[in-house]
Length: 277
Image 1 (cartoon, one colour):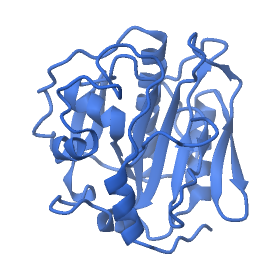
Image 2 (image 1 turned 90 degrees about the horizontal axis):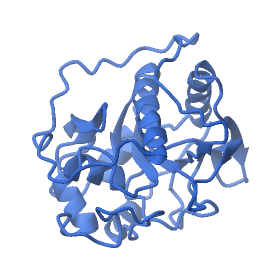
Image 3 (image 1 turned 180 degrees about the vertical axis):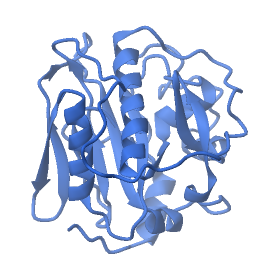
Image 4 (image 1 turned 60 degrees about the horizontal axis):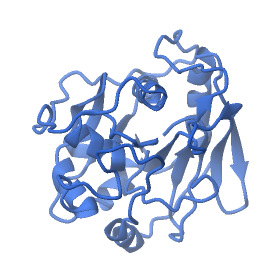
C-alpha cells in the first residue's frame, strides 16, 4: 500500500507522508499522507505555536452535531502506540484545517470508526479523511506550504516535498520513522477535492457532503463527518454491524478495504479538468 494505493479509499484520508494518489481515472486529484511511528517515539500533539502565515481561521461555530453521534455500539482502540499516533494526526488535521480556512471530513475506515466506535477501529493502522478546497482550482503548492508551516511549528516530525512526474503533482513525505512491530507502517490518506467537484460526485439521493458536514466524536477529537455517513458506509461496506475481514472489531494488524466500485463509477462519470498551479 506504500507503493500503490490498492486499498479502497472511498473518499480519502492522512498521516506523516503525503502524496497525490494515482488512479486509473485521469481526473483523480488525491493527496496521500502517510503517517509512521517515529523512531524517536515522538507523537504529534496539538500544542503548536501560532502560524506565522496569515490564514483566515475557518469558523465552525454553529456546525451541528451529526444526528448519529453518540450512538456507537462498539469500543474503540485507545492507549496503544498506533492509537496514540493516529489520534495525534487526527488532532493535527483538525487544527491545520482551521488554520487553512477549509473543511474536511473523516472517510472510509475512520468514518466507520466514528459511527461504530466513536473512535479508532481496533486493529486499524491508518487514518482517512477528505480535505475540501473551496475553489475549482486545486492549489497543491498552497496546501503544501500551509501544511508544511504547521508541521514546522510542531518540530518537523517529517519532511514534505512537492513531486511532479509530468502528469501529476503531489506532495511526498520523506520520513525518518520506523514501522510498527508487525512490519506495517502507520499511515493516513487524504483526498483533496474542490467543493464543486465534490458536490458533483455526491452519491445519488444523498445531500452534498459539503452541505451536510457535522461534528462527530472520534476518540478525544471533536472531528468533522457528514450526516449521511451511515447510508454512505452501508453502500461501501454493507452491513457495518457485522465483523468482516475489512475493519473488523478485533486487532487484525494491517487492514485493507474493498475497492469502492460505486465511487469509481461516479468519478468516471464526472470527467472534470484539473488545474495544478
